[in-house]
Length: 119
Image (cartoon, rainbow, N blue to C red; front, side):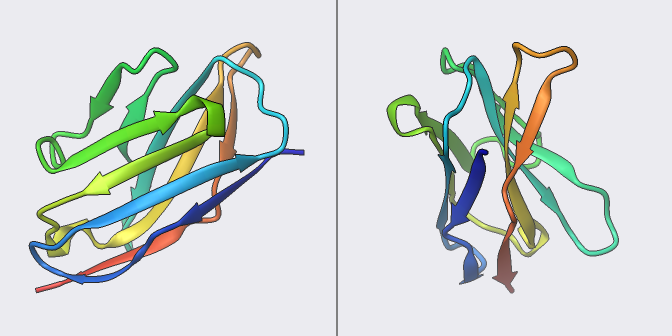
């Protein structure tokens, strides 16, 4: 059984930085697309960023130039470096590992970590 364990959330002032981490515990099948999603109160979960096993990245327009996603394949870990944080970045952040060898693709989700940005 695979479990995704997140860390790094917290409270930060606007303009500050946080780094989120998500490690997969257990045997993980590759190839995997790793990603981060977030959900603010009263809103739907939305994509923040994804990264493929070859390092190709994709970002939501709202975070481009401020957030950086990266991964360590040997550690089955994905990171999200968040700079120049804004109050509108406040949300619960979830990591996602998508297994592409199954049909349909199978998703693992982390438990979520709260990020709060004060103005």
